[in-house]
Image 1 (spheres, rainbow over the protein chains, first blue to last red):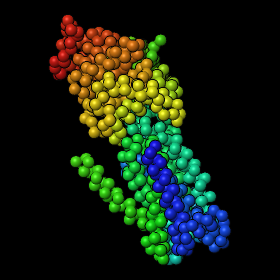
Image 2 (image 1 turned 60 degrees about the vertical axis):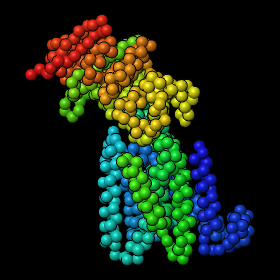
Image 3 (image 1 turned 45 degrees about the vertical axis):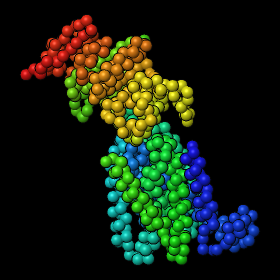
Image 4 (image 1 turned 90 degrees about the vertical axis):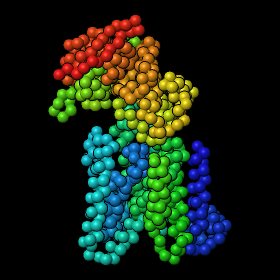
Length: 326
Length: 252
């Protein structure tokens, strides 16, 4: 409980900091007053239409990625699992890339996120079909790896055959992930899917705890395993698919955040869920602030910064784990 | 009223029939030892009886809704899986899941059941250690404690005492006997026939997916049955301190 309070305060502070960070150069008091009262036209516009949706999306995307990672690690009983592993991120990216390349993305405002969600959903259905009705976590991992590889190959093929170099560079930048220039339209399209995903994943807490004892024992404890699998995978697809749809591919959050927070919840998979949601939100907000502070005049991509933060952190964790096991 | 009734239970793995029309009932007060050689179908029988794998025939447990079944029968699988480094106490608390209402946190009754289970399995000193750091035998005791904490009329356990030191093997079997004396019942698969003879009130001998013998240990472990089902000869005596069973040699 204390951990959740600390993380909530951290998210709130970073949210505020995110609202106050940007190239426009307004003072903090002026910015917040404009946000609340609506006085001062330029400031209000910047605050309400640019920075507020960006900060809100940071929370939503981070919470989705952190929560999905924790749920998948709990379900697959593998600390290396993340949404990317079961092919959801790459399939969402594939959907988005196809939309960008075919020009479908330019046809209407929501075409890109819709295509990404479609890709994520398609991947989930394929994982289900491959893993079978009684498939355990291992078959889900194997099916996910196969689909991930397939989506990656298709993605390369699309870029390879693209006749339009401009579309290729647009695609490559999109795939680096960013929260820049997002509006409330993005918030509204992502929110219903993410909220559905959060609810589904929230319902898995007790089942994930029971899975500590293995699938057989959990089933005998009265946990409906096929329902648990449905909730874990559909919840991850909805949350991660929507996050990828509005922010592009942002890796490492779902992997690193549960890893860092696990010792603080005594490794209980159910308790790790809310903690990872808050932790993910904090990490994405912090990285998105860093993006704007480090190179304010270059459009530094969030996914790139996250990889720079995440990879060394992860290496350190592996090193520490190895020392503990020795 | 019997705690478990199994009739005509059959299960296949691929084309091979692993269980062939097995039937038995378990009454309150019994410690039933399930014996048979490797691959005889012991694990399949227990899992099919619980409804954890597809099978034809009838089992009173498999017919129950999962939540009600979890309050009627506890199951300790052979694979001693502990996926995360949770404390022993947290691990044992998982046995209380069937007794918790949706979204409820463990209450005083749950904590009392966990404390009692830890004490019975001699785990008080290890309660706050990560379960994954314990030795294999200690982990097995923690998992038995989890089953005890579930507080069910019936316990099914697949090789629960394999890998335990002799003292804790006896303690676990005696715990099962004590539960039976309370009016519960335990079905336990065992490879140690000496332990089975001393602690089980009844043995089920499984051979090639069928029940080859069912009754008191003395009646089941006859020279003929031992030769047929295990391919061994053994020495069996009644002493002042209870029956003693010692396998002697593998038959050619």
